[in-house]
Image (cartoon, rainbow, N blue to C red; front, side, top):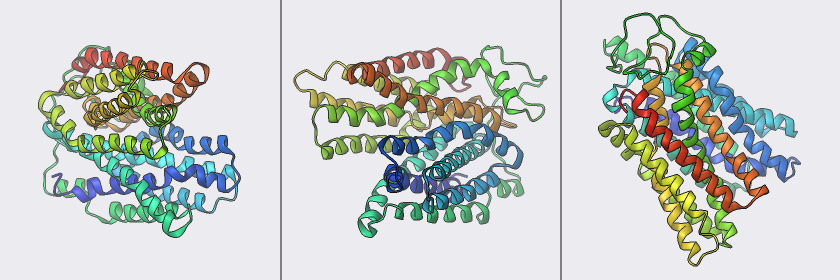
Length: 419
């Protein structure tokens, strides 16, 4: 099924990641071109992350009501309006609103595809399918900055990246709305793969925190906040561990460049080191899915957290010792390997835990929690660096990651049906 419908399943995700990856690095520059100072430019760039966190809840509602395909089409259209608003924005407030709209649509788009994969991909290769989904987005985000560099070098205009995003969105919308719908095609053939999880035949019970072996059934469509309350135990336990993983992933984006600059390395060297970690992350994305499908979710989540958090924690003690550059490079490599091994784990755990008849509301709550962890990480790094030192900020990130690893060790076998 995945090979047959790969263009429809993975193509839109790659296109959105490609356009977003080209635009995001130049958002501060675009903001400065219409009068923003450095602080305002940084805030404009952070709006897209905030919008992703906020957008998951309405996205869950939309997917539950109108379905994955129409949600993706609508999100692509609204994002197109947002990018055009960014291109023609005469003021910072309008620019911020446009960027916020793009972030909301990114959340809706990601959740719609996540919900589709949750309900239509058999459990035996769910992790590999979701890892490839995450890998297709990572590939787009990885290639996007290089496309942006080429466009700006050729045309000499930062907004050329926004026009490139427009082209990606138009292609995406046409693919989603005019291409073969996998769900309709499978339904017409009488083939609708679903996860072979055990079913509980009685009425819905509240989430008491007890171990489960399958999805919690839903007798009727549940509201978003009711779903959040019903699943409060797993969200407050395993969900917080997932948020810590999202946070340490996001922290690496800020900490590694800051660490390299604090060691006095040239920007080119720092870029090469960060690029090396990105390459490792991309190369390992399918291995993560193989590990999860063959040996269980814990064998990907726990090692990845231990590797990344351990590398950050060790790095905190190497700033002023001999060979600190070598330690920095080694830590970056370990972090890249750890992050690569975690590819798809958050989506896979969310899919494992979500009620299969109507997973979108739960996935909206799950993604809100994990995205909030990612959004909080840069704030934690900035505050700790301002009031103490970069080494202390790095050590705290590593410590939080180790706490998250303990949470995975404790709760993945308890809640995940394929832990």
